[in-house]
Image (cartoon, rainbow over the protein chains, first blue to last red):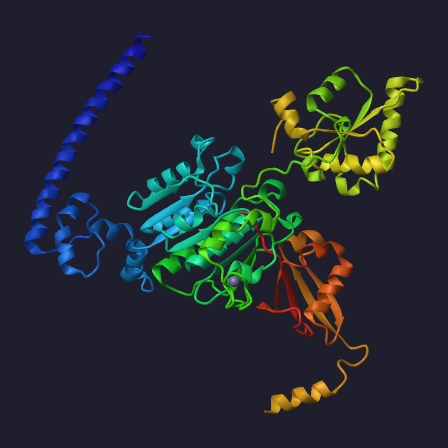
Length: 471
Length: 102
Ligand SMILES: [Zn+2]
């Protein structure tokens, strides 16, 4: 104990003397800087100033000698842009005078926002109404764990400000709707679509057409990405390409189909690049062409797409689509899917063909003879499953009925030992939709007492076992 | 001028000799890839076939493709095409449904 006390005293003493030495060095640095400052003022020499003290002092000198408005701090911050012959002072100045709106602070928006903030867009808007969740973190790299449960807009804005405090960051913490889109979009030069659903994509494209704004559109799912610039330089709009919305079955979401985190990251970076090109007026934006990214094959294809369609209902020659029509257009009805995708909740079965996860748990605890069929895809089953459940993915249900019959028989023999007890048949899935579909077909195929577990494994985790993993 | 004459001569002849066919490569993207389980596939169609004919053949082979039939971009040799375009030997026909995710 005694020696510990002596050590602490020695360390404190050493810290004191180091601090004193540091203060001495700091004051000598200040004195030298002041001396240099006077010398440069007298000689007219402009050092490549890294010190803010010098920079502020020579502001007036610079503004006298150059015909751009870049401050010394900007020159230093964006020096690598300024050194690019094909970018330079002009493009950087254009960028600093521009405004970009990113709709969606998710997988695409994360890298797009970070690069747009870093590169010196003058004003950067963020639209999102979601909160940060743990299962976002693998791809939505702008958010940190400290922001879990808090609005994505707040988190993204904080990250952008910490990268570049000189950019004006505007937070639009609201869902984009036809009621607010015109007002928000009209304040920006370039729109970046980083959303995750079909109705938003049509709404954003139509709004850009109505207001005459270029739209940088990116999308990613699974191991593939798509990128193009709409409504720019006579190019097509989203509706020119896809006049009819995809059926709801074809609209997959990352929450259902999965996505490799870096894939939206790559597309989001390319979106930032295209937005920078448009805002700074350099290069050839990806208009009239679509980039297709295939992560597994490590292949990028660029396909020429059609030009503006004269028949297009929104941007075509005969179109009379106005701001008023935009405000009244029902995008959810048009695409038959919700603007804020929430998990589908089907209700296909009668109440007596269903059972809650709690009631199922009680029956298991009471030793009821039963078979539990899990109809999720095999790769879901591998993530987590309930004990003794039998995995028969929904598409193969019909072909594998004999397995269910023999499992029921086995269970009856095991539990009943001769009596004519009949085992119950339960069906479960992730959220309780596919299990209902499965029970419907089981009823048709003679298993009339089959029941599904309401809310699937998610309700099991919520109501029975809080330690059961959700995904 | 020569090109025009040639086209007319071709038009005057019966389209595609009997039994003659062209071999193309079909590229599937996004949902089309999920529905077929393939990223690409060789395909033989009778010469003079249009992209529309190719799509019909594909839907016959993979009925689930019907789902996205009304919402896709077609590209022939990496260029936008309409369903009426005639495919030629060694052509690449890309079937590109939109992705919505992000
Ligand atoms: Zn259009």
